Amino acid sequence: MAFGRWVIATTVTVLLCLRIAPAGQWPNWRGPHFNGSADEQGLPESWTDTDNVVWTAPLPGPAASTPAVWDGKVFVSSPVKGGDDLLALCFDARTGRPLWSTKVGKSDRNFPRNNLATPSPTTDGHSVFFLYGSGDLAGLDFDGNIVWSRNIEADYGNITCQFGYGSSLMAFDGKLYIPVLRRETAWREPRAGEPFESYLLALDPATGKTLWKHVRQSDAQDESLDSYATPIPFESGERTEIVLTGADYVTSHDPATGAELWRYCYARDRRDTRWRLIPSVVTGAGMIFGVQPRGGNDLFAIKAGGKGLLSQSDIAWTFGRVTPDVPTPLFYRGNLYVLDGERGGKVLTCLDPKTGRAKWQGKIGGGGPWRASLTAADGKLYCINEDSEAIVLSAGDEEFNILHRFDMKDEPVQASIAIADGRLFVRTASKLTCVGK
Image 1: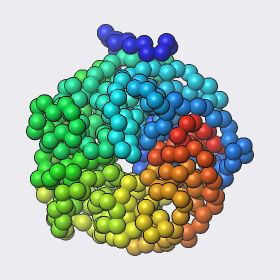
Image 2 (image 1 turned 30 degrees about the vertical axis):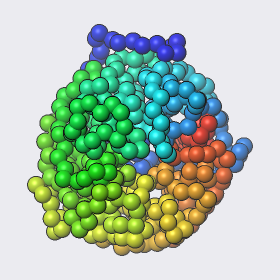
Image 3 (image 1 turned 180 degrees about the vertical axis):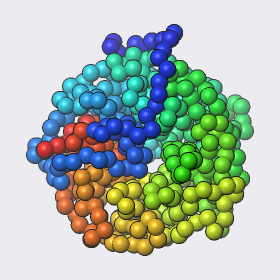
Image 4 (image 1 turned 180 degrees about the horizontal axis):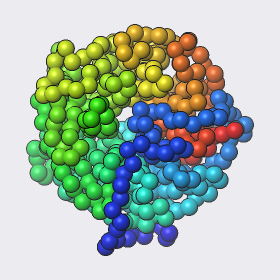
């Protein structure tokens, strides 16, 4: 479509958001299972500038958002380096050919270590959804036409996170979920409408209209109210929950109404005013795994079936010391992988999710911090650090084993590696690279 075209549809077909994506897709930041893993086979364990590189495509600017992949299309959100436009991009997954570029918003805001294209796009298999740190939000069809658009900041007030809004939206089971966990007083202009509420929002993906808005209460203070985490679904028995972490609490919500089912205070022994939270929760082995903020503090396992305010008896185990500040843990083939990407040689730990026992641990090193989250498929773990050094490791509970390390020489990088259709999709500062055999 023509660049910058805005289309508002008067009628749309009601969409059914998929609970689990079919094979070959990567519909959101954490993949088809919402845990960082995919079921792909035949993936490469190494690549260079030329070997196992299927194609590369230039990008207009760097961003921390991870690509989404669906039915042969790769969706990418991007700023324009040196400009103010916020773009939704689409590439042919087989060839890298640009299919369309649509302007969704515009803003000149700047943040340290971040920009307005940090939230990752998501798709329900019918439409693709883009959210930006300016509050601009749009649902597009697969030809790049804007079906609906709105600005959640215009609707609900300033998104006040100190380092810019960084949560990704999530499509699940007929709803589109958007979290805004923010301090009560704006970090930047505009300052009208204070004090601000934090909330979890559910939208109709067909129209963009609000289905419900749940105000999320917290007694956290100052920067500890900021959260950059993304909501994750959790299914246990006959109950489905939407789980969100930040502002000193993990909370579980009823998908039908947003009503809070339970909450756990992860800061009960340390009420810090600077405990902003970045990693999302991950689920597996019938439990929910979360981390305390800023790295080096506890990772904890929450038992299923909780109600009301949880106590320490609802925690199966905790694991401390080498835990992440930024990367979200990975659950893959019965193991929990935790990456401390900044301290002590950058330590990766493989944990037994049922007991919290460390099966193995090793240092991945590298020049820069590891702020992207681990992803996995085909018995391999993939990650890339801020200095654009990619690493491949063996998955499993045998031993720590680095298979490959390669400097892609295109920094800075904070986006996680997407895995779909037997290939890797690696977003670096100025290009998108497809890696495959």
